[in-house]
Length: 429
Image (cartoon, one colour):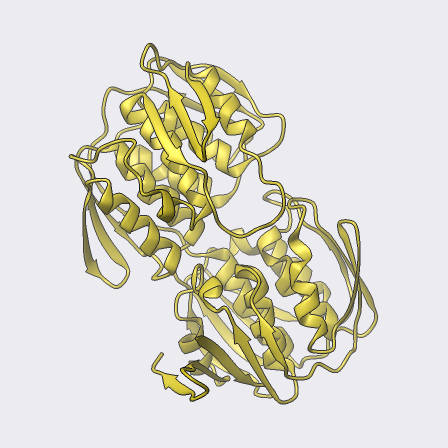
């Protein structure tokens, strides 16, 4: 069993580099299916979800070659549609991008239902609505989703009833090689949607309006290979900012796009965290004395749901009452019980958490129940008195590239350990 062990109380100092965005890398890698050529993808985070994605592609017949730790060459020339490994697909939510990519290239798709973190009901009804508008017949049964558009894959006007990042990307993937023009109304605007569109355009697609609520896709006959670098991960950057905010000290968060960070930066400034912006960096200073605030998670450019648990830790340390309203997922509050083991006082009422701040956090044995909950536990442990042991760290490593090593470089007392038969051993990180 692997675990992360942290002794709190150390202020953080130094520079930390932000890796490529997981939520952009995964759809870009699946988008390579549309290209009968080699694609070199750079700034790919070395995380478990990426490893699973590459294994899925490899088992489908793609030639996958690691150039270095953060660059990979993917050649999908001879990839076979409808052959994705069911058990691997169940490990990650992003595997649903196989549906759009297979439909776009082969005009049919056969993919197991996706997995990933449990945030309650996460339907793919908007994806299905889009596939059907493009000419696909959709059947869901026996754990699989089948889409058939072999008679005609054509452009269409699509209006999403709710803003959906996954559906927006999936319809872009489906439509780039379809005949005619597709328009997506009420499209999601997240930076990783823009990144996927930019990648596809670099390969020869004609996508316009990504980053706005209306995207126009003019179908093309084929795509070609390219070299492309993934954008920095705004959530990883925000997580390191939160670490410095509660632990105190001064850190430089390098390789960021400050524009993407605006909602996070603004909220932390409200909480008495000093933040200085540069062209590609943020300097974060904090004495650990935080003020309460309220936030509601919303689709971009609103406050990101993936920073909700981390911000709750800041609110635990702020003197006064804070409120978090979750506006995206149904079951984002699973981390609350684990933080309570460390002394947090959080009451959940529906989709709202009422957080009593100014509490003294103490080290405890806790479990990472999902990716961002695990990040929140790391942040809490940095500010806690005593030792914290975090288990189920595979969930953290799904989305954070060497978070233990990076925090250690900033001065945190943090280790990853392996514990066989009650005997613990350090793991180099």
